[in-house]
Every structure is written in structure tokens, then in C-alpha cells.
Image 1 (cartoon, rainbow, N blue to C red):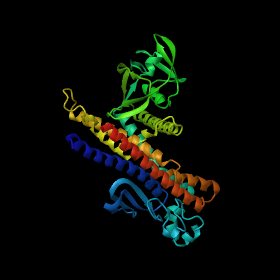
Image 2: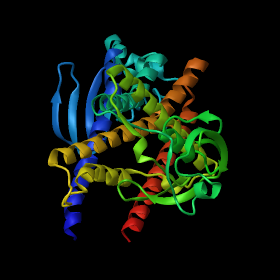
Image 3: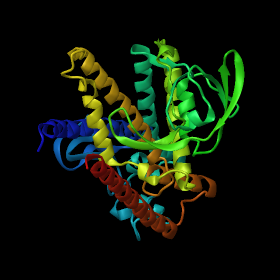
Image 4: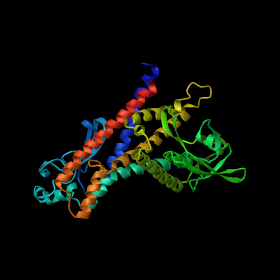
Amino acid sequence: MPLETLIILPVTIVSFVALLTIIVFIHEYGHFSVARLLGVRVEVFSIGFGKPLLRWTDRKGTEWRVARWPLGGYVKFFGDLNPASQAAPQAQRGPATTQFPSPGHEEEVAEGMTAEERKVCFHFKPVWARALIVAAGPFANFALAVAIFTVMFATLGRVDVAPAVGSVFEDSAAEEAGLMVGDRIISMNGQPVQQFRQLQDQVLSSGGAPLRLVVERGGEEVPVELTPRRTEREDRYGNMVESWMLGIAADPDNYNFRKYNLIEAFAEGVGELGRILRLTVQFIGRIILGQENADQLGGPVKMAQYAGQSVMSGFDATGADDAPGLWTMLRVSLVDFISLAALVSVSIGFLNLLPVPVLDGGHLMYYAYEAIAGKPLGERAQAIGFRVGIVLLASLMIFVTWNDISNLLTSIS
């Protein structure tokens, strides 16, 4: 095994575990904190699955665990059978469902509990309280991302890049359309463009549709129409990815580094969260419409790969004559890793809000039905939904893991 692999492999594993542990903890702490606030007894808070390596009990009776397999985590409420918040055995009267308990048996279950136990049982809380507790996990992930962006923009600042053309690539859509170095892009499809990243976002989400630009050239406004091309390129870590591109690069003389005060940084952080969510929804929509390749979806292997690369990113220039100092290299790596944590946190929050039974979004979908109908969804419908949710989730995990492995093998072949 090459020496480089011997170094990078343990770094990748450790950084991936650290990344996942932070994000999972925040997600589960969202559920936990709102449950405590609404008077639900929390029996277990676990980071990881399997046999506990560490455990302790707090003054409110919650057992905290660090388990053997750190690939997830859970919060177990009083009355739960398992980490999926299915009702305890005495509440089950039929096939597995994702909601309290088996519909129609609420009174029977209530008789087996004291008034005090019913008061602190998650499954006996009103539907609005259960919905808040479930939604708190994904929204905690979003809050983590906003917090990361806020701190970064306030302490390290942000690079603003003017939408001016610094270079035009050969045989690109931009060259064919006549874009020239020095052109300043004023608008795209009628929307004003003030930052180069706005231009990048619109191109990435175009799905290959023609774009109408207005550029400032020699003091005049010139209309330009062009169609992005699907192009394979290297990302900043050297991985080959496919995306829609015009074939231009920003002008390095138009970079402006700016630090924000705390209020401005928070507003920018919220805006960055909205930007990531918008691009994610558009990307999934294009996959559904057949405008994007589903092989761009990634899973745990890709997450681990990027975690390791982000941690090592500051040390890429090690050995060069103009290599930066150790502190600079560490800072670059730390910023890259924290930025990745924000992106992954948003992705996990978004995934959990999908209306798939067994995910938080599936629970919220059932709670919406219960709030409108005045009663839980029927047992048979819940049981079918539970099985469908398991199949969908398992299929997605198999698909993205296959993508990860295939792309990884392609990159090293």
C-alpha cells in the first residue's frame, strides 16, 4: 500500500467519524431539547448504535451513551419500543407502524400507565407538540449551518467576486456565443447579477436550457444568448465531477474580501442556507425530470472522501518552495472542514424532511393528516407506509453507496 494511502486513510476515517458525530449530535439534540421543553421524559440519548462504550445518567434520568458504531444516533422517549419511536410492546396491536400506538388502542394503552406517566409520554402529547419535537431535529441541522456561516463571515470574512469575465475557455459555450474577456455580466434571464456566485448558481441549475445574458462591453449593453454544456471538470480537491458550464472564469482583479458585523454575518448565513436548499431542490427536480444524472448523488463513502480531503486541503502545498506556514495550513484545513460540516448538515436536515415514512418528514406528514382529520391515520395505511419507507430508504442507501464506490474506482483507475 502506498505511503500516501497509509496516511490519508486513517485521516479520512477519523475526520468522517468526527463530521458525522457533530452533525448527528446536533440533530438529536434538537429532538431532545424540544422534548424536554415540552415535558417529555427522555430515557436515552445515544451517539452511535450497538454496545455502549461510555454511559452516564443525568439528574433528570436520561442515560447518555457513546456507542460502538458511530454511524448515527437516536433519542429514545418514554413509551418507545425502539429508537424509531415506535410505541412500546403494550401499545402494539398489529403490524409495525410509525405512529402512536396501533390506532384505536389509545385508551387500552392509557389504562396501563399512571396519570404521571401519560403526562411525560411522547405518544400522549398533542399532535402539535409531537410535530415540534420531530421537526426540531432537521431544523437544528439548519441552525448549525447558519451558525457556522455566521461565525465564518464575521471572523474570516467572505470573498465577493464581481461578475466580470476574466478568461474564456476554448471550445466552450461562452467562446461560441462571443463572450469576451472584460465583459461584465449585468443580468441573466432578466435577473440582475451582482456576484459571480449568482452566475454560477443559475448556470448549475439551468438544466442545459438556453440563457439570455446582458453584458456591459465598452460602455454599451450587449445581449448574448448561449446554452451551457455538460462538462467534466476537477473540483478543488481533484475529484472529477460533471456540471453545466459556460466556459468562463472570474477576473482575479475583481476579488473583494469583506468581513461582516455579527448581524450582517447572520443575515448572510441565513441567505447561504436558503441558497443551498434552493440548489438542492432544483437538483432533485432536474433528476426527476431527467435533466440531471442521478450518478451525481453521493452517500457515506463520498462524505468520508470529502471529509478526509477537506482536512488535508491546507497541506497540499507542503514541500513547495512557497508553501505557507503551519498555522496557515491548519487554518485552511479547519475552514474547509467546517464549511463541509455546514453543507452536510443542511443535506441531512433536508433528507430527514422528505415525506418518507420512517423519516422525520414522514412523521410530520402523518401528523398533518391527524391534525386535519382529527384522528391518526389508520393502522393498515401506516403499516404499508412503514414498509414502503423502509424499502425506499434502503434502496436510496444502496444506490448512493454504489455511486460512491463506482466513482471512487473510476477516479483511481
